Length: 86
Image 1 (tube, one colour):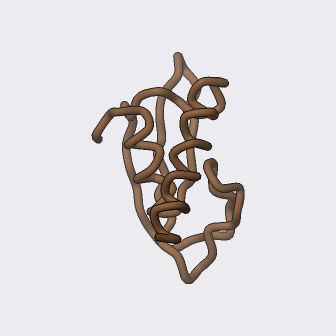
Image 2: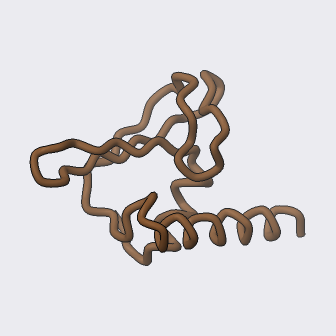
Image 3: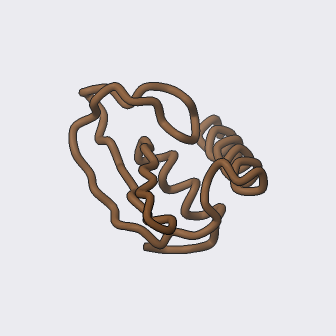
């Protein structure tokens, strides 16, 4: 049950950040995964540590590259919230 509540909270945050424009509404970039570097997750605002896998979505907006860092569970919640599979 606690997992379901945590997932629902991540989905709520993802939808709010998509609505506000903080996160993109579609997944149209390249996905990279590797060892966490301590960067903050774009969804939960917690660091993605070396013990975690860091998911980085790189998107091109005009001539600028935007990179979004996620934990796996946060990435999955964002994809579910934006309704777009990579």
